[in-house]
Length: 239
Image 1 (tube, rainbow, N blue to C red):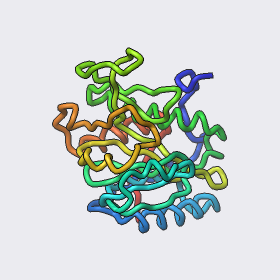
Image 2 (image 1 turned 90 degrees about the vertical axis):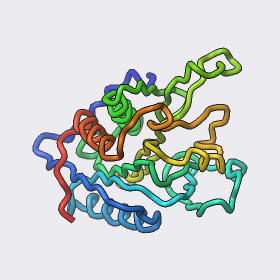
Image 3 (image 1 turned 90 degrees about the horizontal axis):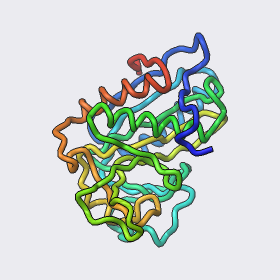
């Protein structure tokens, strides 16, 4: 079954508390974010904390997933490189990119990793749709893509397309962490230090690059609404 055919609704079981929704200002150092995710996942797994979505921006950096190939790190000394336990390969994080860390207990939802990835893709697609951008999933490439018909077609004759959002997750005791990133207004040239997600032959784009005049706050509003449609209710986090 293709991911687009999967039932992507991942609402929690009846009576479950809403997902905490946290937005951090400024640029969060990656080691700090990773430590906080580890802490929250342990609390959630032990039943001592509710699920959490945490929205951040990072200073410029590259992260390497469990499938990263060293040859895909094209400029090794450009930005700090962090090894992570998430799935996937190399990706870039930096100012102007919304990163959403998803700490969700799939035992309260569905113990189905493919459905979870499809649900994250659907959340991104719905977010973009609210801003009149058509995001699409690809069965052979995780993430969300936009067609660029104004550009020359690909060698196989298919329309050119760019990646606008990336996904990389990890599960511990069926609690997820890491998550998704949406390119709002990052420095796209910074992606040139890697082969993003190990996929060559495609470009990277952002909402601003597509001609939208949106702010990070605009994106956050749409992302929250889309998340609630797919995953269920949220409530402001009280740290």
